Amino acid sequence: MRIALVVACVLAVLLGACVTWTFLASSGHRYVYTDAPSTETVIVFGAKIEDGNPLPFLTGRLETTAALWRARKVHSVLVSGNASGTSGDETKAMTEYLVTHGVDRSAITVDPYGLDTYDTCARAVQVYGINRALLVTQAYHLPRAVSLCRNLGMDADGVASTCDCGLFSMIKNRAREVLATVGAVRLAIWNRPPAVSAK
Image (tube, rainbow, N blue to C red; front, side):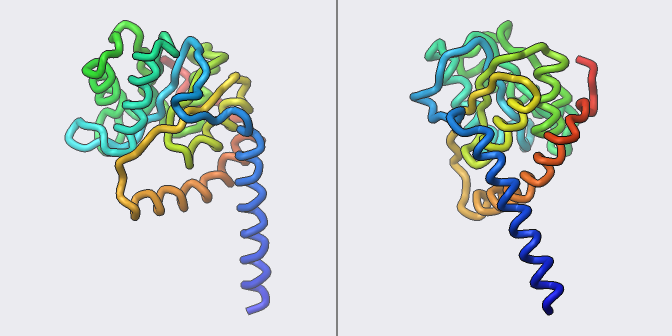
């Protein structure tokens, strides 16, 4: 029982430290849409789709991205996700959604190998040469996304997107995000290259 308690305490401290790092590293670089600064590029992170269409998490990110475009706060868009994901081609669904919501197709660059948050950031910097951008994702994901991109050398600011999601989905994703911060710290220290380095 005592060993289990010690292990639980160590894990709690580790999680707390990792979450604290992401919030401190992204402090002053997280915005709501109305306060987002203007810049050249916006990066929108992929998520699962269904029957070729974005699900609520991804829809919220795309709606915010399209709004930034219409407000002329950005001039180009990088859609980054898994083109061979288990739910389908995320980047194709993202591109088509943005085009139907007013974004010029010629302004959209597709990264089909944004396999996870770290790879999206690493590829944006190392493959696409992006050194400044707005990152669009849900508020709970912003601290990790912004801190990873900034750690990789990008002058990144995050913009919180909406999500017409159920309570259970939000709780599940928030809990998963806390665990993912441990991996984020490890990746920030390791600074590995992206899984795929080609365009």
